[in-house]
Image (tube, rainbow, N blue to C red; front, side, top):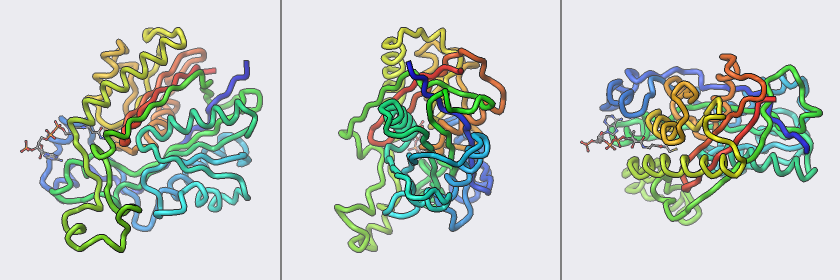
Length: 336
Ligand code: COA
């Protein structure tokens, strides 16, 4: 059977490191509160004027360097923080990289965006539509958050960053980078909970010109979250989807050498790993350094795990995510 692999993982971060103590000077919060509730110690914010497409381009250039070519047949870009209301960042990445006329997809599945992208790229290559795809997740959150005590529940959680990889058949992929065969993936969504984690405005039901000064004043342009409901659903859904995917592929959780989940909260990941009977040392977290970079957390996790030489040939690697929508999913890989 055709082996389709992800390889040449790379990341890019905002250039300003923001610690919890830095945030404590901007709003009523503390290093103790943030560390205890989330595990986050710092995050990176981009300079003003830098958009998600710029971080995506920085990560992608490094992926191209590793893969030895900048030839790809299509781009799949995942973000919830596009540079502009439209067009999406896929076309901006395409033109900034000088990739002439290739198709560019934007997917808007927030924290699950990279896993949605993996399933899409896997299927498009399996079907023979494209041979080599750039998959990149990128976010600039710092410009869209309410950086004040009013917005502190969300403002302390998020960071700016991008992560990218190349997906193609193993026969054409370079052998000098760590390669992960995509075995299978499973995705879900439930829009009934769309308003539990969302940004109401601007939007076509109520376009920018109609935003009243009062709505602006009350922060309707900033994201809102029911933290407890998101937390409970993240634990439940990530565990469910991992169990379902593992059992469908006849893989037991003790065979999983590495769990590289989305990074929303270390407590969520500890609970999911525990429910899956994956020991803490097999769960790879980066949230302490970067906060939640939404569509970029999973490729950033792969990039850092590769840099720390965690992988051995033939090991199983499991990933899972949950986010706004609600959307959630899981994917299983083998190091080849
Ligand atoms: N600093 C200090 N205090 C804060 C704060 C901050 N940054 N943010 C909120 N608080 C306060 C609240 O106002 C509340 O005060 P009160 O008790 O006087 O009303 C108190 O801290 C407790 O808030 P609560 O919401 O109950 O905390 P929590 O234990 O549920 O943790 C989250 C909050 C956000 C860390 C947690 O709910 C979470 O991680 N949820 C999921 C987040 C997530 O996954 N988001 C992204 C989706 S991918």
